[in-house]
Length: 377
Image (cartoon, rainbow, N blue to C red; front, side, top):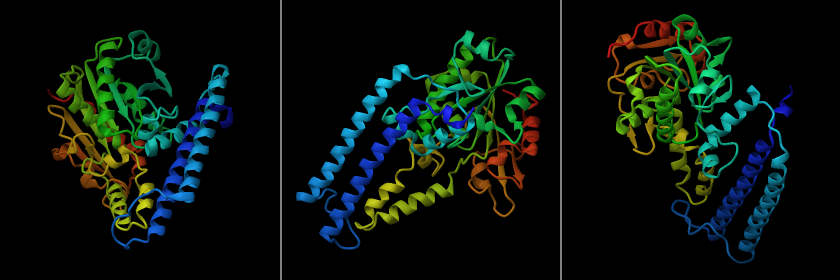
């Protein structure tokens, strides 16, 4: 099946909405720069406003008005076609593109109700699974009493766990008898918001699982580890019961102390905003989603505090190092080992990049050894 057959009407509608929003945003940016140049303020300082006046202001207002009218008109066309549309299957390419869009703009997609926004769910082979006993039993006919939940990283999706012929979940099912469950979520939303949703989802999953879950483990890659920690924090504050089944957390390249690249992006934002002439361009830098901004210090955006270590849960952390850098190119070793852990519960995978944590035989061997024994409670 070709890639075109995987493009859905809702995808085109979502892209249409993005195009309208982008046009309005560019019009605002250009008008702000026009106003600054016209006013000729000092090089350093604040601009006196972002809207132009007179005929110039009327032109920009007209551009925005026409864009909104076109957006409403095309929206009506898509709504009229919706009853006749039949969603085709998907593809790894389509899923990858949507995952990246959600990573970069996911908070805005969710806030505007864009159909491209990903809703958190459990998926099996890329297909959403209803969190109900019958749906889970049908999706997981070999449902075990041991469940491993996998939470992917920024700009990724649940299919990314299968890489270069290896899948940590399938391997744990084969070697240790776990049933792997993959979470799919919008990585552009705040980490705290995703953590709250994951908390509620896991409570339902444990309650509706076809058999009693005796042992639950969570494996989080990159941002997924922070979302898992946030879910534990929400659970402790809400008095959830699913954490009573939680045995271990495994972090793969999780930036517990933040990601330097995001901190550099924030520094550039502040530098650009120093001058009223360049300040409008800072809007482009702020297009980074709330999820990306949360990676600056590895913390939940709502509390603005570092995520606390999960109380009473055995944690394991694997960092990666490319050899040239003391890190995997995105997350330094120190950040990946940021949770205070005994030496036996942390490890560095040498000659490994950030994404290779998903497919490295050495990483799997270390994780398998850790999870072969149930952690003492």
